[in-house]
Length: 442
View 1: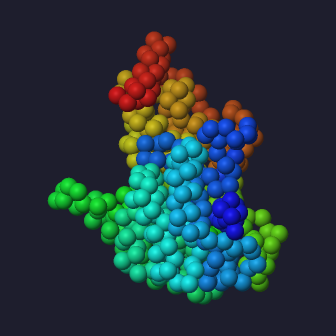
View 2 (view 1 turned 30 degrees about the vertical axis):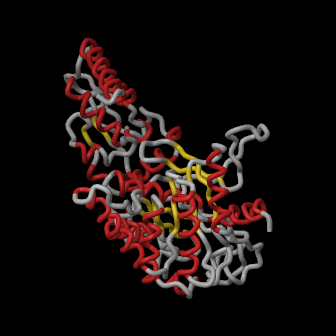
View 3 (view 1 turned 45 degrees about the vertical axis):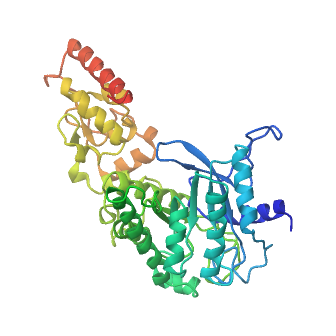
């Protein structure tokens, strides 16, 4: 089989792996220098925020396992292919030299045994790193069940490692992937976490100590192929973050590709909106310090698909609101829908010059169509008073409720001692100064 045919098969087989930020992209305009190829090119983000393109491919889609949810399972009739280590190394380097890619994302089916598969992957990465002296980004999948020595060697070659958790519960894993075990998955995760921590500490003692998985580790779980609730999923993710120091948990909406009585029907649409809500909840846990138990509970185990998780939390915790943006601490401001970390920094900076109003908050970057229901400010000192149901409708469809109608209890600011026009001008200057300073990194 020629190399282009292998690339076509193995890049297509890798599209179900969600451990990258987006899928492949192709550019029209012929074969000009720097054009990307739709087959196998995807995007990720570097530590400094740059978007980089990766060659996303499997080493082989041959597999000895028969996981019911997998398109490459042993019993599925699909075209099979496998690279030689020399072929994958040459392909990666030539793509890089032509400016098609800036790195490699490498996963694989399991052929013969986990150890044999890992040896082949390691051999390919050794050629890329040592023979071709490639210093770019490599993300590699560690094979569950492989020996610790091979996992360690892979971590010295790759920038980031990942081990797929697959299913949100051990019961679903046994039912849909009986040849895999949760212990075989969690053991290399623990090893990678310990190796990464040790690698961060070693340079203080040994200046030239080898780096182990410098970009940390990630994992992926499939959503919608098994009956677990959103609450079970985010509790698992929270546990993985705390116990194994994961950088990211990726959620992959199950795409029906094979007929099976234990799986959704082949014509069932992937639960993409549910996947999106889980990513939003994951972001709240990682960046806003929410816990899984705050976002959901056994009594309300699933997210409202029509509301983002932060709004969903807010309308179930109305006793916390309204929040005075001119007095509340940073931790409480972060809980307000429509206010993110950057807006909080700007609010804390600008409010030192005077009290902030709605126009000031809008200039700062607060999303008022969500935040206005949960805040007090200079020109709205008593907030908006409405019931939970009315607030839910307003958040889902902001145009459905007009301010000043009978559906809202609004209060004017006459006689409240708010700043006059001269003070407003000063406030505008303070807000603009805060925004400019923060954008400039001052």
